[in-house]
Length: 383
Image (cartoon, rainbow, N blue to C red):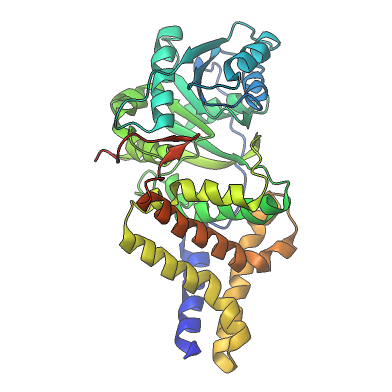
């Protein structure tokens, strides 16, 4: 009874390690030679009730060691906690005290996801404020950028003629729940979107990380602006797919220093973060949901269960699959500064993510899917 599933699980893990784009390798990008001149950049920061973190994020942008013009447009998306005031105070004490424009997002229209609408508002304001900006840096209001981060990002975009250059920042990983789940979040994302495939213009896989996305302005114009992704909750990956279409060059890497300031605290907040968009990732398909549930059970839960419950060849095959699983997770733990002792517990973490994914489908059926910062999307996605 156990032998077929153990053999299948082992075969899948051999494929994942050898044929899935090296997703488990957590190497950092090498520095590139900076061109003689870097282009002007405008940063667009959607912010909704981010007073606790937006000051540090804005200051880290305006304090960039960037030799070309740099301006920040913060979109205050109907905050009621003093987000705009915190941003202005941070700008006043930065090395570019006049480098911040704050605008208020209009009322969310039907068919638009809240964050994409805020991004579009910022993009329009940026076109008026910095019309000669060659790049737009879409970044979140909770990201702490290192002083030389934009300089290296722009240098790589210029050197490699990238239309989109994105970094997956280091996630907050302090509480017990964060230590258990955040490395796995990046691990699962890379399993779904192997960075090597994303960075290959000949491969169909496209993805980005919304915390840091440096986009060539002409690429945004080429796809018709953000209207094309107006209803997308997973806006970063949708934008990457739209830009990459036709073989255009995009890049996604792990950040060495840029990090998220957002702490999730306990397991409940992490659960809600996953449940917010997991079913969206599955295109609201019950069939895909069932397939993912079966796949995650087979890949992550079967190996330890069969290792304990079975005997003979089935046990050894399952143990081998579990060993490969543990080995594949070690680089993710090292990148996040976590102990390798967390690795054998990956099946438990996978079960947690699966539960949150199932809950995401439940929330959608109950009319609570598609939430961003406490606000619901006004309609179903426009297709």
